[in-house]
Image (cartoon, rainbow, N blue to C red; front, side, top):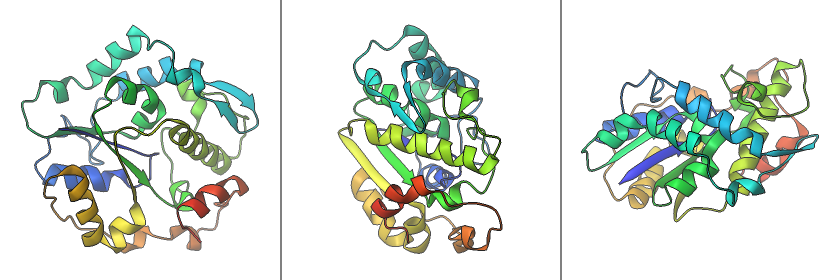
Length: 237
């Protein structure tokens, strides 16, 4: 079984990576403290190979349709294979990986690995954009968007782009969505859902409830009107 965790950086994906590792799933090596497979450079480069095939329609709208039908470049496949070499080389029965940038090239990952079990990790975007992440400026990955000097807006646009990219991609055979808030506040219940999906027992790791609702005490701008559809869809007030 092969597993991957997708979701924008600061969505809490490390919790799932640490859970899988503690449960005996080989997550590649080496890993950083966030549970990301490193070094990340080949994954970053793969994201930049994909980006030019996304058509920016202006404002906060992108056309992802070409990604679902075009031939996947050999260079992308080479870079992804290089990034995942430790995972592919492992003889472990259960293997996987986590790095947030997988989200930026998720449509092609899914086409290359249709049988993977995909875990889509969601967190309230108002919490997600409070801290810095390497994907804050999508231009670093070749993605076009309305340029802004407002750091929080830049992060919010990055969140929306990655959310839209996932939503625009046809769902794979094996797919589950998990909110960080549920994993923290209802861990036992959420682990049962995940165990049923993965077909393996999962370890229970320590979690901290103070990661929930940090935006309520945040002095900066953390709410944007284009968050509204996702907030409604995923039950965030």
